[in-house]
Length: 195
Image 1: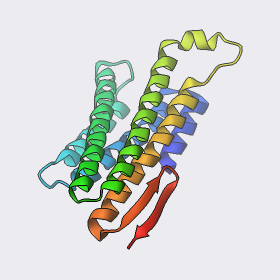
Image 2: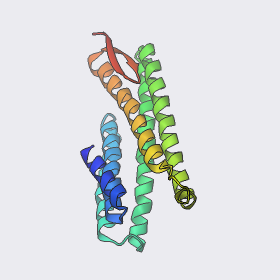
Image 3: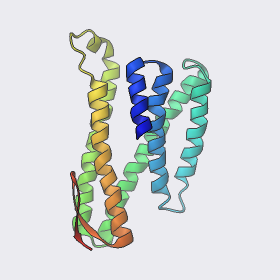
Image 4: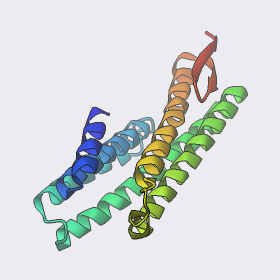
């Protein structure tokens, strides 16, 4: 998380391509690591290994080639597809966890996880919409007397708000499966009900 903050600071302070890579690559490694952790639950799926190989190759391509070269553009496209693939897998895993909790008979916990997942999903949808809006109308926004910072406020704020409930979903699931504890879950954290 420190590297994400440092990279984001460097990029937004300088707005140079090398700093943009410092901003994006740690976030990419975070989603790759999350996909790996989740895929490790299902031994027949090797999504994590594929993602790490892709991430290492992609890092090399983005660092070694110019931004506007064929390889640089190809790397940017693969980065975008990699983010998308990992996010889809992470959301798929969260949905699957909720179903598994229901099959285990922990209905209340499953409902809590579904609620947290829904909050997380819509926060990420909002962050992506703000990011796309910022890109599409950047020139117009820059001409305003005060720049509304859709990227900074929309993307970073809603992404952070989306990560927290998703993290709680995974934490609750692991606790319920491994230790058979039942938790009361809300956006603000966990409270143990039964040990």
